[in-house]
Image 1 (cartoon, helix red, strand yellow):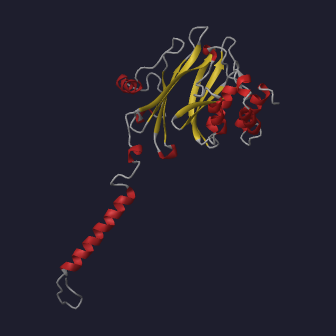
Image 2 (image 1 turned 180 degrees about the vertical axis):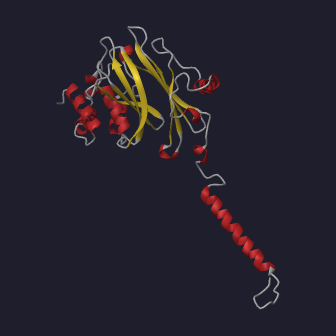
Image 3 (image 1 turned 45 degrees about the horizontal axis):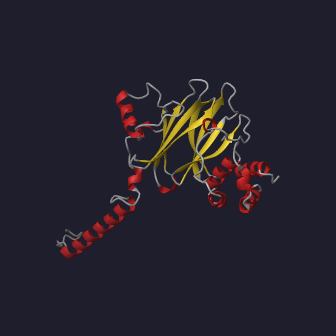
Length: 285
């Protein structure tokens, strides 16, 4: 190296080695910071064959036959409900709670009368592997017009919101809310076309909308009503509010009666409205 006064100085090999070591160390630290070496959760950010369908209408003409065949391979066999096989309508992608989930919504419109509309919801992980699937009715003499996925801060979960219309004397159910919580699907509310709370109908299997909580004993119902997760609470109240439920058997349990009274004073509108209806139906109000 040549100094300003013209003197020649030879580089110090040790100093250059130390400088190189420092440079390598900085590069390693930077690489770890930006995730070059694959931090936890890197798989959740990857792109799968489902991403091409996310947020796009799956109606005929939007995708090639080959692309739709790819989607059909992911969906697999879908159970028939009311003799109707639901078809893919939407693919959604969520990243809540630090993990990626795909949701495939399949729908089947009202065809013959008497009959009903049907749906299937498939939940998949970040690698497009199916975690769970639910097939259910969206209403007897009720037709579906659309569905969307939105996040609810109040419930701390994603909501599938299904818009429906009664047909040929069907029940006044205009909006159905299904929460995806802890990789489970829960029916948390039904509304009339006025936006009022509507009752599910359990008097016959063909009239039932959605999925019921997996609870049979008073202890299991108590666990849902005591849960800190509002999704659990609402799913239990939807069932208790339904037509055709043997409420006297459940209402004899003092703890259930106590919980209904407490929930009827909740600050959450949905919880309070559902609990107040339950209170009237079991004779507490």
